[in-house]
Image (cartoon, rainbow, N blue to C red):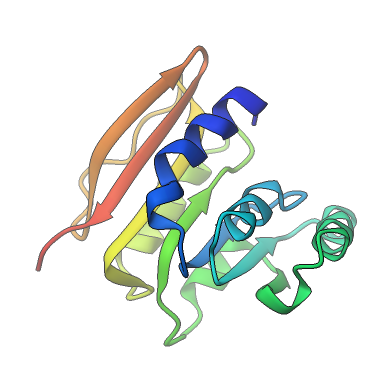
Length: 160
């Protein structure tokens, strides 16, 4: 994610970050979750599959002194989402590798789970060439921002 897109994302999310419980899917080096913590989030769970990348994630968390606010899980995102848990998240960040259909499958998994609160925000970064998730039962698209070849999509839990 470019610094311009990241800055825009967090300008939009900052009012929702204070004391938030965050889930960073496809965490990579942890830049999004760490930024959320630095802006007031209470806790972030980082999910990343790649063993080498997750070691960088851990080092980045350690260098920012945010270990006590962080949980790092080396696991496939869909496997993590499909496990049974009572943990609900206020903010879910999704920034997967592009052109692999991971946004669609991840959003379909999130739509069927109860890891959301009534006010959960899902923020997605994806290529503007990829299809936006639609036909979701419990999550609705509330905003799209375009930054060249990158889109930021924002979903909220629908009223049930």
